[in-house]
Image 1: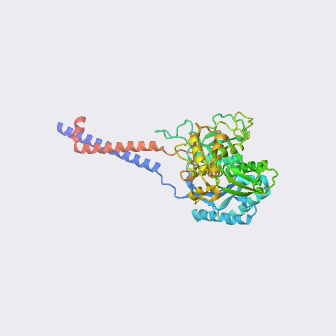
Image 2: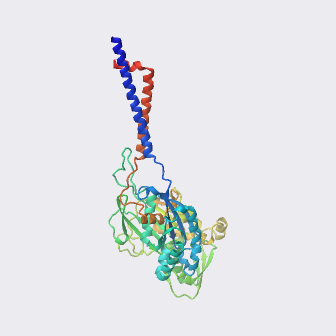
Length: 510
């Protein structure tokens, strides 16, 4: 009788232990499947597209962006899928040849039709933003500027896209959109997640990057200053992005893009000559002729205009970096400052702080000069390299860079010297803060510039409030997967052990 009771007890315990182990294994398998399904939803196959044309002073570029259709106004990352450079100068140079604008834009617009699937053409928005070149033309002749925009609008409207209009953006907008693009691509607007929390930490957001933009006609500097007290309200913008408030300093220096700065320097230097300029910003042996009327055509050079006895000037290069820099410094009026701290020309500039992304011509010029090294070359090292480059004979340079257009190659000495002078003497970066400047052309295969920020703003792609967070931070997801996997392994091992050595469990129970 006693043996029978013991046998029944053993069977009862065995069934219950196996039931518990089986139930635990089922729970672990369900948890693993649920985690995998929730965290790894299939990516939406349908995407949306947007097109932005950057109508700059010296060129026009077309950018095509895409993003997951189901992530609009959420956390979906916008990425660049195509960049098309329009052949020829900026649209402001088409004042006397308006009939050619159709052909001018055709190649890149046709390219957009190929890249974007035909069923999505009618729902793809197209924006055109004109920058400093058109701002200068509007200053000179508002009617002609409006006429160019009207012809551009008519031309783009012939394509099957959802054209949203062409407009001249302000310098402040250009700086702000460049700042938004930089920090959006670097992920600086969103917060880091803690290891086991399901939501991001409630602490301070990541520190934003400043933005340094250089074009042909203007340059912009935009950043969040350390001192929140702004002495110049006109240079202040307020944003609310991803649930955070940002007070941003931004200023656009019209006429201080690299092309207009060169024209200013030439107009200044030619006043005390007989028509021949010995220019240290061009290589030894280089020579260029220029019509005097073309030099004074820009509103940026009007302040240097004077009566001269000749109609044409001759530029002869001497290739001296130090003399070139001294000539450029005369463009920056630092004789007065109505604020506690200024850049130049009496413009308020808070002390620069934090990291900066330097893009557009800042990057292209410095990349050509091999000065974008990640080793963070010091200003002294860069100066030494520029001295060596500017002193190179023009004939030797033409042979070495035979594939570079003469017009571009001849101005790299000036452009490189101008960039160093602008950053060090105009924006007051020091040897210590210089290491915070990062010359960048692309981030995650997307060009850094104002165009992406412009589209993000117009399409409301960056929400003012923080969007819903992902189901689980990656670290938490990995932890839970490992945790439930271990439980499943332990349960399986116990089942195997119970099957082969059932007496171990029975003896404990008895």
